[in-house]
Amino acid sequence: MKQYKHVFFDFDNTLWDFTYNSKESLNDVFLKYQLFNYFVDFEDFYEKYEENNTNLWNEYRQGLISKESLTFRRFSVILEKFEIPDSRNISQKINSDYLSLTTTKTKIIDDAYEILNYLKNKYELHILTDGFFEVQVVKLRTSKLSPFISNVITAEEIGFLKPSIELFQHALKSVNATKEESIMIGDSYESDIIGAKNAGIDQIFLNHNNRSDLEIKPTYTVTKLKEIIEIL
Ligand SMILES: [Mg+2]
Image (cartoon, rainbow, N blue to C red; front, side, top):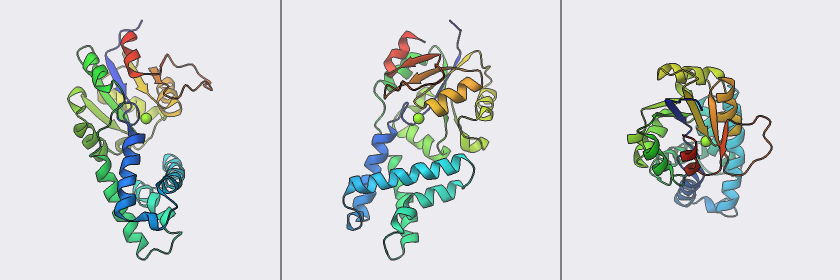
């Protein structure tokens, strides 16, 4: 087995429960802005938001739209269909509330705290994320995970998103690590696993949903974070 020194963690849905925390924040803005006047119910709003947000992130990944456009349009696109007075302004307010609300949510993935506590004396731990720096850093702090983490590297600062090889190479360089002594842990096969693999970095795939349609076999696969103890 390789002697790893650096462990790179994806953040959203690997350590921090993005799906749960985001849904809770969306429910908060749904109530605050009385969006129930326009949608059947919260689930209806959530479904439309998710679909639109996924499309916008795909455009952002391909460099077709800016971060500002992504954050603004994830609400405006679904609200513009209704003749809401001042919908542009309201979309901006909703987005800003949504972002600050998510940073107050603290649900983490099962055993995240225990696994970081276990790993912290053996390895240098870093975050490698596609999320926005100012948001991720606050989320890390409010969920009490920041004491374990040496560096937070965001795709935004490099200008390349996962799975681009440039991002992984930059991450290695910025923490003074070689690919041989590094391992990437993440819940996204397409972003975290393929990206690390292409950069020559070993990977641990956190396979929450028991996916079996993988073309390339990750170095290791776990379904729960606590299984990492058997690997590292
Ligand atoms: Mg993730």
